Amino acid sequence: MTIVVRMHTATRNGKSMSLGITSNFEDGVNKKLIEFGIYDMGAYGWMDADTQDPEFLGHALWQTEPPLEPEWEQLFGNGPVKHRPTDMEKFIMTSGSDFEGLMKFAQLSIGQALLFRDNAIDKPFDDNNFFWMNYVNAILYLNMASDRIRDFFIAYQFKVNTNVFSESNKKGNYYSKPFTMATKASSNSKTKELTSKSLQCSNEIYHFRKKRNCIVHDVSTNVGRQTNRLTISQQKQYDEDSKGWKSNSFPEFEELVQNKDNIHLHHHREQEASLDEVKSWYVLLIRTSNYVFELEHYLRNPHRYTASN
Image (cartoon, rainbow, N blue to C red):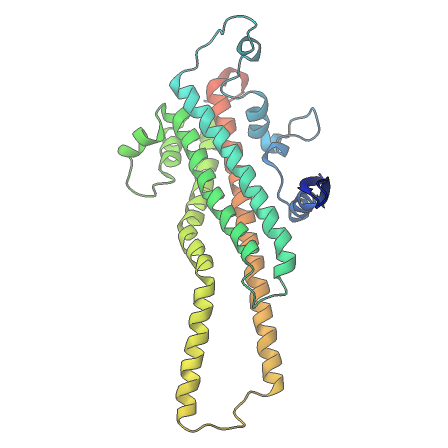
């Protein structure tokens, strides 16, 4: 999509003029996301326009048969509303919709990081703030999204909101606790399969969440750490020089080139590893939500599934 921004200013003779500024920013972000294999959550669940994808059935069901269908006709004044949503239905739908919105923000943050990577990749001595800012944003959105899909799971599985559940379940792996409890309580092969897969995913999410604070802190203080290393180097050099300065102590040209190459290599690997990490977390949440959405649909409509007890 091309974005055109028009700014109206007045000339000295009182006439207004339009300044058209054309940007392909959104096109660039979407192209980078496709190349990197990060797709919109709404793209999962379908093999074509009409055929559900068995691998991502949960996403197809969330899109076509959500826990609560808005009564659009009635909401626009065509007759009385037939169903008053319960508070639990409201919580479930809000959690699921929040998850979807946060995943969209995470996706766009990853796309912008990819776009700015091209500029940052060859500049290891620059701050590259736009790359790292979008990377940190993606981490924060993914962390919040992992909270919302857990809220969604707790609400339909245990019929309580997260605050009530958390009051009596604070021990052990806090994040995975509801998935563990649901797996142990599963009554048939279908629920056992889906809760077990959700539990496995939740344990992986837990490890990403544990690293989040360290990652955000490291990125946010990167400039300070670089300054600290430079100051330490100057301290060491001063101490060495105080013992007797040598004019030929400057590194050889080949050594300087090697050091420069090593810095570039480290910088490249650091950026690639960071992007791979947020991609893994994003894809993991797509898989997790697929199992969670399918399980919710099954518990609502067990008669539509063939499951052996």
